Amino acid sequence: MSTISLKIEFGGGLELLFSNQRSHRVTIPALVPASGSSGDSSSGEEAAKKPADLSYLISWLKDHLLKERAELFVENGTVRPGILVLVNDADWELEGEGDYQLKDGDEIVFISTLHGG
Amino acid sequence: MPARTCALCNDARAILKRPKTGQQICKECFFYVFETEVHNTITEARLFNRGDRVAIGASGGKDSTVLAHVMKTLNERYDYGLELFLLSIDEGITGYRDDSLETVKRNQQQYDMPLRILSYEELYGWTMDAIVSQVGKKNNCTFCGVFRRQALDRGAAILNVDHIVTGHNADDIAETVLMNIMRGDIARLGRCTSICTQGEDTIKRSKPFKYAYEKEIVMYAYFKKLDYFSTECIYSPDAYRGHARGFLKDLEAARPSAIIDIIHSGEAFEIKEDVKATQKIQQTCKRCGYMSSNELCKACTLLEGLERGLASAAVTDRARKKFDAEGPTPGNMRQIPRFTLPAHIHPSHSAS
Image: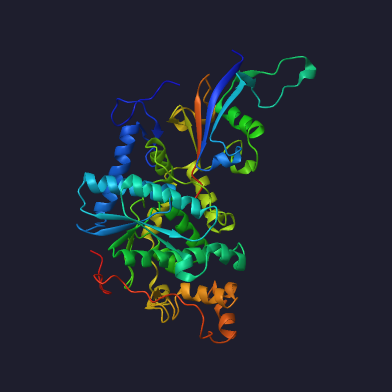
């Protein structure tokens, strides 16, 4: 398959940055540029590819789904500290965080803790 | 990556890595250790007595919702013998507080506890919206915090409770320690890590979540599917605490135990004798009877500032001189009603 289909959930107020919608279904490419930026096509060679991982998904969401205030979602190439990430209902720290390779049908949840209690 | 098994039960799939210990544990074990740690915090500090009436400061947010759930669970599981109430304060922030109060009303149904809501409007005659329009967005958290503290005590007195519990978590307390260091607030630095505070003329107030990480509270709520309200207060972005919070989050990312470690450092602080001697002694406000470091308590001072249109002058002690220079207090100004402790709490009641 050349694309991966994912279910994304936002909670803890993050949904406000994503059209005030908690649930989203997204489709991303299965293979993405390894360096994170497009390769030099003038040399005629293909840029190296890698399987799409969570880091890629985060920047993809920022570029395609985020409506406002990117600094509340991402910082230094990853999610802002204070935002929890769950992969198929498990802490992303158990799955290698940004390096986790996405599979078709995965469910990713982003929950912000940065608000009053 | 292969699925990991829980480090505690060696049976179920691990779903969380605990920031405190680095352990990888499953859902059921997580619920159990989280709840048991709070139970240990409560028993080691001997917070409650059998038969105590306890008001849970409830905002509808993540911490107080989880607190209400856990208090109810532990009260039943370990037979604390407590009578639990929900106490909510309406600061009058449109679009923020009115929505979260709906959550508290749902909590009341879900947890089957009596609920009392007290508003700034009825107590002080000023909503936070009105205060911000007069004071601006910089120092308004000072007003809100001071007014809320008193409001909670008054609400608790109306409910005739022995004890107030709030959902302050480990992250909050670590932030407060950092803030007090950054601002040189020695008096607060010496007090802010106490799990239970009681003045001569106030109701006992504790923080059962003192050692509970914010991350775990949110995960607990998520996995238990608890209903809470989660929006940043619209007036908070300019608050000073934001600096401490941002810093703390970065520290946590590098070394998760930093939060607990900062609290332990704070607990170990001891104020030097010669510094202690310069601290103000506690007295009672001559206007409303609440506890105070000065003749007039902070709430009365702030309220007078608002009423006289000199709000910014009331915020710091230094600025107070300008305030006093404006002349004496007008005679017919609105005041906070006299505060009295519930009859069964004596002023010299010592914490057990």
